[in-house]
Amino acid sequence: MEQHLPLPLHEAVSAFKRKLVLDVLEHFSGNRSRAAAALKIERTSLLRLIRDLEIAELVPGHRGRPSSRR
Image (tube, rainbow, N blue to C red):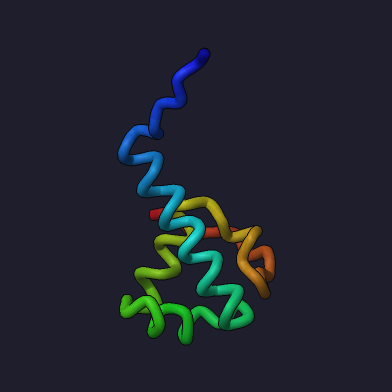
């Protein structure tokens, strides 16, 4: 019988963040300002999370703008 091993910590944290951010954005119909306020983070921090987690295309109301990486 194969034993199920947990994800490495960084992968588990990323998966949790991805689900949380997407759920909150869905709740607020893609409104990033309201989602950031609900998460108690700055809007720019939310935008960075969306970019870093590579979930922009999954965000409700996404307009297909390319991310600007610096």
